[in-house]
Image 1 (cartoon, rainbow, N blue to C red):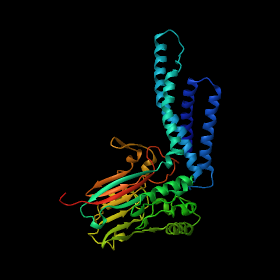
Image 2 (image 1 turned 90 degrees about the horizontal axis):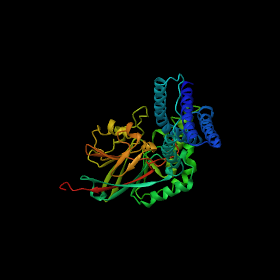
Image 3 (image 1 turned 45 degrees about the vertical axis):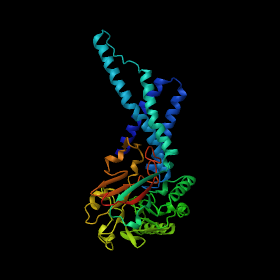
Length: 409
C-alpha cells in the first residue's frame, strides 16, 4: 500500500508541474482538459492493469502498454520539474528580496516566464516523442551486427565459419506478425552455418509461443539450431496453481523448442564437425547474479568435452562470464549471452558513444568484450519486455565470423 501512495504523490506532483508549463504557454482551456484527461486515462489504466487485474504477476501485453504509456507521460513531466523548480526558486528569491527591500508588507511571487516554460516543453518533447517512437517503430527496428573474431587455435576447417546469434525473443510481447516474419527472413538471409539462441523465448508461459511456432520454424541453418534457457523460461514470475502446473509449463516449452527445430542444451554439449575437425558447443541453464536463477552447471555441461577443444559457450546471463566462466579451468574461446536487452534504451553512435542505463547493472551489457584471451558477445535482444519498445538500442541479430589467425601473425 505504501508504494502505491508514494507513486500517487509522485504522479500528482509531476502532473501539476506539467500543467503549470502548459498553462503558462497557452490560455486555451481545451488544452488543459486534454492534458488532464490523458493523465487520468494513463494512470487509471496503469492502476487497473497492475493493481486490480486478476492476472497477478503475469506480465501481459496489456500491462506492457499500460507501463509504456505511463513511462512516456511521466518522462515528459520529469524533464519539466528541474527547469520549473529552478525557476520557482529564482521567483521565490526575487519575491523575498522585493519584500525585504520595500515597505510593502505583502509577499508577491513573480509570474512564470513564458519563454522558460516554452524551453522546458521543447526539451520534454524529446523523451516523450522518443518513447512513443520506440513503442510504435523502434521495437521492430531490427539490425544485423557483424563481427569477425580471430583465433590462433581455431581448427582449420572452421576458418570463415559463420554463426548467427539471437536472444531474448519474449514472444509474449509480440503484436505484429508481419514484422516478426520480416525479422525471421532477415535471419535466414545471413546464411550462417549455425543458429544459436541464448534464452528467454517467452515472458512467462509456454503458451505465449504457440502463435509464433510456425513462423520460427522457418529459421534455417545448415549445421543446426541450438538453444539454452533464460530466466523467464522457467515460469518463475507467475503465480501458478501448483508446482505440477509450473513444471508442466517448462516441459511444454521444451517441447515447443523441439517442434521449432531447436536442440535445447540443458547443461549439455554437442560437437560441430567439419572435414574431420570439430568445435565444442556448450549450453548451460540460466545462471545469473542479483537474485536470478542459478541452474547452470559448467562441470556437468563439459563432462564430455576435451580440454583442448575449441569451445563456444551459450549462457543466457552475462554476469555468469565474470562470476564463473573466466575462473573455470576450461578456456571458453567465445561465450554468447543476452539478458540485458541493453535496457532497451540508450545512445549508440559507432566510434563515438555507447551508453545505456544497463551499464550501471552489468559490466558486459552489449556487444563484444575480451578478457584473458576469451570473448563474450552480449546480444541486445530480439524482442522486448516491460516497456513495449526500444529507443536507441535496437533489436539485434548478431553474425559472428570465426577466422583462423596464424600464431606468427
